[in-house]
Image 1 (cartoon, rainbow, N blue to C red):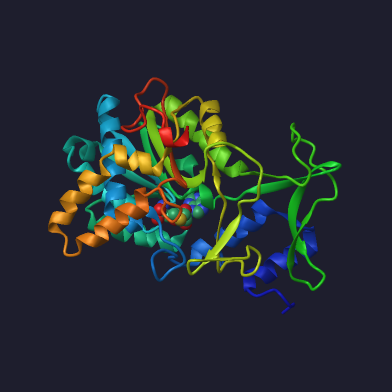
Image 2 (cartoon, protein in one colour):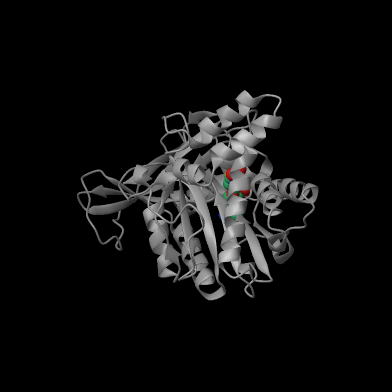
Amino acid sequence: MAEGLSTLLAQEIAALIAAEGPLPLDRFMAMALGHPRYGYYMTRDPFGASGDFITAPEISQIFGELLGLSLAITWQNMGSPGEVALVELGPGRGTLMADALRAAKAIPAFVEALEPHLVETSPVLMRAQGAKLAEAGHEGQWHQTIETLPDDRPLLILANEFFDALPVRQFQHLASGWHERLVGLGPEGGLAIGVAEQPAANIPFSGPAGAIFETSPVSLDIMRRLGERLATQGGAMIAVDYGHAKSGFGDTLQAVKAHQFVPILTDPGEVDITAHVDFAMLAIAARRGGAEAHPLLSQATLLERLGIAHRAEILKRKAEKPDEIDRAVSRLAGTDEHAMGLLFKALAITSPGLAPPPGFETPDPRLA
Ligand code: SAH
């Protein structure tokens, strides 16, 4: 094994580079996360205290409940259509979907009308999702991509920490223009990042010397197509993720293993790799598809507006450890730097003319 090639996937990537030349970062990231045999998500359940990272639905049931109720009300705002697809993109363990379905029972006609659809590429996680849905008394339908989602009914779509897992490309501004950052082989034979010799032709703006422009073409393509779907089929989407409200320069790629940051190239397939989501670009992509994008909210503001404090009080009355509920609420909706409330944001898009989901009616003063 060449030095520095710590995993079987690293060896496969090195062989590919030797044969075809350096890889754009999005190809590297797609292989690291989604390689059919060795990809990070394809082989494991990475969530929770004993895993690599924890997500909002795994912190508290309140997260999924509030989003489920929000979509139930959106369904009523749509005129309570008799058939609707409740879609989740990248559902992880299926916890968000299960919590949303349970809360949706408050509006029985919505539960009658809906059919759960899950867009997921990982066989391990599909199994976990199927078990969670069965517990909740539902059957799901799975899709590898958004293309096969139903086209004969409105869509109500949830996505939590989905877009941050989609591959990004990066370009660095040098004297001769924007050069794509590529994964190649270093002098010792390990994976190393360099830049393309030739500048990219199609970036129509300038930037400070050395600046990095990061973009996720896959994310923008998915968002534009979902915008088209919502515009023609009707419906709404709420996408929650960590990221920034305004586009800017900078390298936001990061890798995490066992709740610690690690270098992105070291152990491909063994570490989670994500990038900040550029919400401004996602909103533009959705509008390009014909949908309406509503003002972005911080997770803190969305959850407060949906009544997280009230729901927490009710759960605490029956809880053995009410402190744990307080801690979960502080983590989800708190605004200090260790909490998720400001770093995470929520974007709502709807078919044109449909009222935004509850909470999204007015802009977020925290993001002003
Ligand atoms: N929403 C869950 C999981 C977030 S992790 C939660 O909040 O806990 C990212 C999820 O997206 C995983 O389920 C992963 O398998 C899935 N995923 C990653 N890339 C994907 C792709 N290209 N298509 C569909 N699902 C993908």
